[in-house]
Length: 122
Ligand SMILES: O=C(CO)COP(=O)(O)O
Image (cartoon, rainbow, N blue to C red; front, top):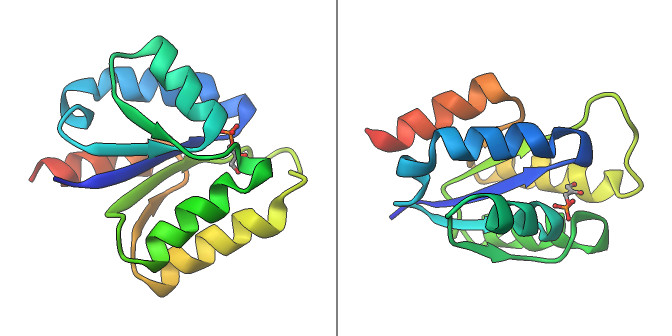
């Protein structure tokens, strides 16, 4: 079973919920983890079972990064807000970097998220 992390900044949360709803039948077969607020929204607005980490600004990105470092994650959908600075930018950069170090699939926009999840179907 693939283990997938779902993360979205506030301005992108609605898009992530819509994405997760559209791919719900695929995502149901995945082991899902999310940062705190993203996970809460997914739990409230979809039928998916989600393990929740801390909220991003409180260390959630780093917790997911630790799973990447431990080779526990197969992919990440991280819908970032490219138009607003985040207070925890260093944590975000660390997560992106560790995905490259461990060659873990990382989708930061919807077009690549679709390819990532469709790839999991194969
Ligand atoms: O800030 C985030 C990712 O950098 C997401 O955190 P939340 O899901 O808790 O909003």
